[in-house]
Structure formats: structure tokens, C-alpha cells
Image 1 (cartoon, protein in one colour):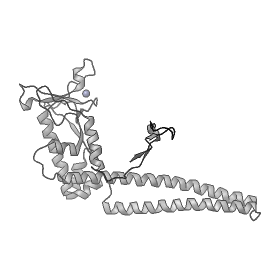
Image 2 (tube, protein in one colour):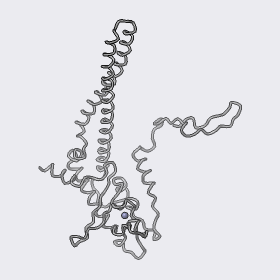
Image 3 (cartoon, protein in one colour):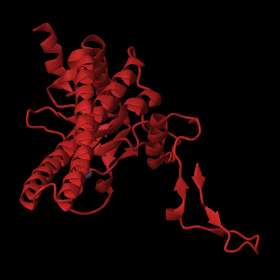
Length: 292
Ligand SMILES: [Zn+2]
């Protein structure tokens, strides 16, 4: 809800004047949301990637998602009426610009890309389905029971530190009054007040630290949980669809091919929503931690 968008310069006039945006007062969560926040932010992201259909009318679900691993630019979807599906491909958008920095080798066929991404997604899904706890832990999130305990302990410590901080203010006021009234010597006052100052400084540091830790832990475990819930919606996928892709993946990075082995080997990296790019060995480790 937004209030104070306009004001009336005088009660004598009926005309209202717009207020500058920084003077608006925004009250969040006053109405029930029509769509949940996750969906909303995801849609905003998707809208940033406007896709123009190609002249042939064909479009590809990877447009806007697939990027060059070297320059970070989007890869262009290239197709033509005379192309068979297996000929459709993506190239780094810099390859159309003349110049030395063009990444023209970042060429990948759409079907290869789709197959690669689907395979990796299946691997991730099976890891989550079979070894959920190990997967969670491997991503740095504590098992939920443990995490809850730890968070509760930290919140309690934070509360205690904040209470002590207020108490010290009160104590300081009292010794100050005592000194003024002559009940406490100035030297003794100085000593006590130095002690209190030191303790307050320590407490402030502790409070900062705890607040940060709590926020980080909540954020991280929240994201990992969201991802796990997302994956559970797609336990059985036989074909990649735009919905699944957009729900799970925010970017795919295509590397330059490596032909040193005599075969064309090309690495792609998938950045998943909520958790980003998984470290190279993570899935392997998860599967082996369980069987070990
Ligand atoms: Zn490039």
C-alpha cells in the first residue's frame, strides 16, 4: 500500500500535486498477495530476457538463458527455413561483430545443448530424490533439525546480548547519578564506566556478528530448501519443456570446444535457480558419500 503520493498545497484549492517518490510511504504486506513472491521475482527476471521470434517463426526455449562462458554475452539462436532441427544452433553474439575478441568458436547445436542440460538435470533430480540430506549438507546447509537448533541458540544469544546492552545503559546512568550525588568517587566512576564502555563495545560486535550469521543461515538454508522443493515437482521428466527449464535454470554457460583429444569436447555449466552452479564434484560426492 502506498500513501502520500500527492498533497494539496492549500485547503483553498481542490487541485492535488504529486509528491516526489522518496516522500511516498510504502506499507508492505497490507494485502494478501495475488501471486507469491518467488513467482513474482522469477517472472521479472524472465521479462528481462525478451525473446524475438526468428524470421522463420521458430524459437528456442534456451534463448536468453544460454550465455558465453568467456565473454558472458548471450548466445544467438540461429535457424533457417532450410535447416533441419538438428542444424539449429547457438553462437556467441560477439561473433557477428568484427574484431579480435569475437568468440566465434562458441558454437553449440540446440539439440546437443538440450540433451546435455536434460542429462544434468536428471542427475541432480536423482541425487535430490535419493540422497536429500547428503545433498543438502553438501550445499553447506545444515540438516534441517540441526539447523533449527543452531538458529534457535543464536537467536537466544542475540536476545541476551541486546538485553545486556540496554541494562548497561541503565547501570551507567545510575553510577553517573551516584557520582554527582557524591555516593561514588570520581575515580571509581571512571573505572566502572570504562568497564561498561568496553563491555558495550564487545556486545555490539557480538550482536553484529550474530545478526549476520542468522541472516546468512536463514538465507542459505531457505534457498536450498526452495530448490529441493522445486526439484520434487519434477521427479520424472522425460522431455525438457520451457516450464521446467525456467523453473529450475537461470543460465547455461557454454565454453569453447576443446579438440585436443581429437574429438570435439565442449563443457557447459548450468546455473540453477536458488543455488547457482554446483561445484564440479558435488553430485559425484553426494552419490558416493551414501554408498561409502
Ligand atoms: Zn563470447
